[in-house]
Image (cartoon, one colour):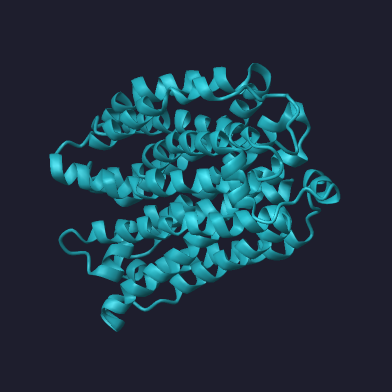
Length: 414
C-alpha cells in the first residue's frame, strides 16, 4: 500500500512542474513573446485531452488483467514522456518542431496518467479495511501534494541558484530528468506488488467481463456521473487554488518567481499534513457531511482568499496561499475514497477512470488556460476565483445524489 500510494507522486510532480515552470518553458519553446504563455498552457491542456483515451484503454486493462500490471505499464510510459521532454531541443535549435515535440510528449503523459491516480485509488481502496478506506486512500491525495511539493521545491531551487540564462539553457531539463527517474524507479517496485484480493476474488468467480468500459456504462451510469461531477470540483479547485497560484503571483501580482515558488512550497507542507486528517475524519463522520462543509467553504471563500494574494504584504499573500490550498486539498482527500466507493468491483477501475479523467481533462487541464484567458479578456485579476466558485456552486447538488459509503461493505457486482 505504501508503494501504491507513493505512485501519485509521479503524476502530480509531472503536471505541477509544468505549471510551475511554465514561464521558462514559454521562453524555451515559444520565444516568450506576446501571448506565448497561452501556447504553453494550451499544450498543457492538450495533454489532458488524451487522459480520457488513456482512461478507456487502461480502464479496460485494469478490470481485465488486474490493477498491478496496469500500473506497471503506465509508469513506464510516464518515464518515457518526461525523459523525452528533457532532451527536446529548444526553439532556437529546431524552430517550430520544438513545440511539436513538447506537444507529443505531453500527450503521451496524458495518455499514461489515464491509469495512474484512478488505478492507485482503486488499489488502495480494495486493500484497506472498510473502516479505514478514507484514511488509506487519502494518502494518495496527500502524496499528490508531495509530488507538487517536490516539483515546486525543485523549480524554486534551480530558479534561486541558477542565472536566468542557465535556467533557460539546461536547468529546466534537470527538473524533468528527476521526474523521469522517479517514474523509472516505480516500474520494479510496482512489479513486486500483490494483486488486490477483491480483483482475485472477482477473477476466481469468473465475473470478469469482456468489455469493462461498456459494461460499467450500462450497469453503473449513475456512479460514472457522480465520479465525473465530484472530480470536476476537485480538478478546478486543485489546479486553480493550488497549482496555478505561483503562476498567478508571478504573472499577475508581479512577485518574483523565486518568492512565488517558495510560498507554494510552504503551503504544500501544510496541505500534506491536512489531507490524511480529513481522510480520517471522513471515516468517522461520513463522506457526505465532510464534503458538504468543504463545498460551503469553496463556494463562499474562494474569491476572498484569492483577493488576499494581491494584498501587498508577504504575510497576506502567504495566508491567502494557505487558505486557498486547504479546502481544495480537503475535497481531494474525501473524493479519493468517495468516488471509487460508488462502484462495484466489476467495472470500478474502468468507471472511475472514465469519470475522473474526463472531469480532469475538461475542468483541470483547461483551468490554467481558462484563467489566463479570463484575465486577458476581462482585466479582472479575480476572474479565476469567480470561475472556480461558479463551478463549485453548480456542481454542489451532486452531494444529494451520492450515497454514503463510509465503513460500509462494497459489492463485487451489480
